[in-house]
Length: 168
Picture (cartoon, helix red, strand yellow):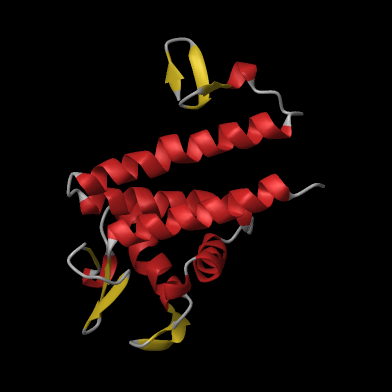
């Protein structure tokens, strides 16, 4: 993000002050980036009952974290693997199509629909009216954006704990 003539890596870290050889600074800056650009804004949107916008930000967060943690050049593969690894609700078969997981369905209908067309495909929805992260209404997948965000936060904290404790 650029403010005036200053390019920011995250809300509190300028690119010009990052020390690429200092693991602690990089971890702190990365946490600040994910929390400041993705997680906190999504939380504000959820608090204001803007579930669709919060859901869109959750989708981009998943896309970003999957790119960092999984690294595959195939977006469908990396997002499905990330969801199955970090959010257990997605690690189930889609009961409407047993040849794919819920993670793959989320990728196809939510991620691709929102990123490429600005909509969720196949009548998918974001709603916090249900107590589960994934609610199925007949053939329609409904995602609770509040619970999705909480699951993303938890997975991010787990990932960062592993990075911080890695001594290599």
